[in-house]
Image (cartoon, rainbow, N blue to C red):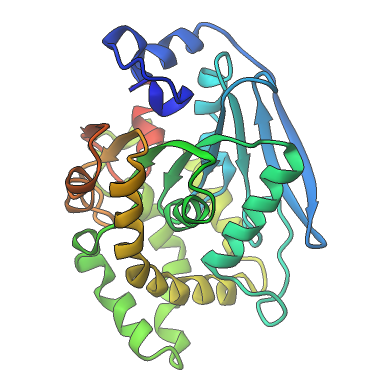
Length: 298
């Protein structure tokens, strides 16, 4: 599965992603914190590793930012170029008002595409997590020839993966005029729950993660942004058949690393990938939604 990272055909155990990560861990590389101007917005991103190395685009989930990759990036930067952006409305990127900016996954994918073009990155593996999945998968549908593989961490592409957690969100999709029903998703208790649920040893969790996330969620107007995005997430279901057809046709090498105790994206969302992908390696980890927080060493 080293091909997930490098686009090669060498899939021996010696060149597995686990081996690659362990090798990179022995070296430390500086992470650069940069900002690009895209569509008059400041798009913040973390950049590490040799500029000419195989690139990995790291796409964060909700309600976090590129900060979720802070520990992973130095571990892989010895062998790869790591690019981890913040979407508009998240992290250090611009946060335009939701009335003047389309907070949709289509728009996010278009902005990420422009960022990669601006950085001169023509081919890349995509690491998708949570919201990163609909962003990254849209990129793949736009440019299948540019994507050399996927790393999937609790990122959904199948209807089976949307279970009980999504029932109240589906009600919101059906009655979007009642926006108040979705604001529970930005409640501080819900943010902490996303980190702690499914984690047996919660002392491994750094509370600064959810403190930072909540600080950014609490910015005036950000709740409306999250309501827009939560509504737009419903558009992904109609895209799933097209995405699955892409998997079958292009067969991108894929590594799945999934927290099996995740109530948001349970393992029922991980197993269907095997229906469509032949070059697939799957690891179900004994943790929750934010697997990197507890199992980053693995």
